[in-house]
Image (cartoon, rainbow, N blue to C red; front, side, top):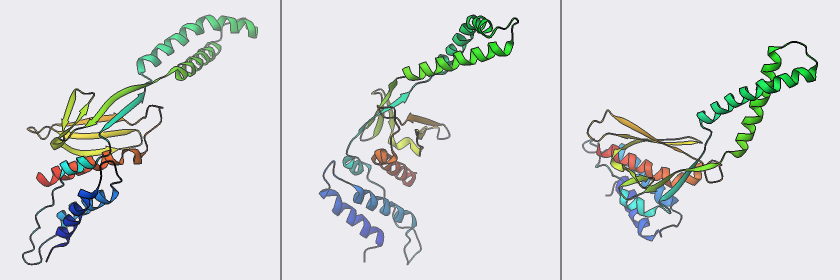
Length: 222
């Protein structure tokens, strides 16, 4: 008699050939995830030993992805630019402070007037710079059959991925050195679209689901 794990695996591969590339694949992912979960918990009633793990087939999952390329953008507001604005506002405030003293009819120098003028200059410059900020291309992210590629130059092997973290603004993929496993590296990506808005989680579901399967596969093979 087939175990529950074998039943789920059989159903999965019955579904797979009928799924066309680019078609909705929610049912495929649900079956895949269920089979992997069962592989971790199922035991034989006779000898209480674990069943043979159902290792995710990354090649098959890769073929189900509706797209393999992603563009991540970032709204730049670098520290050097802000520092320059601070210095510029201080420079302009030296000239404007004298005019403000005259306009207010002040006979003596007041430091708080100078401070207020400097803050006003800084606010004006920061707002102006903020309006001129451009959303620039951060990187090209492409999923390959055995790795992901960054900007067509840096390749990260799937077999080295051990963790995945995602927030509203960041995607972090953590890898480990294949030889010195205590050495880990975090690949961080800003999750902005070309309009400067954030990607919704649903926009990246296929990507995160696939990378999660990669991590599960690596854990079962460890």
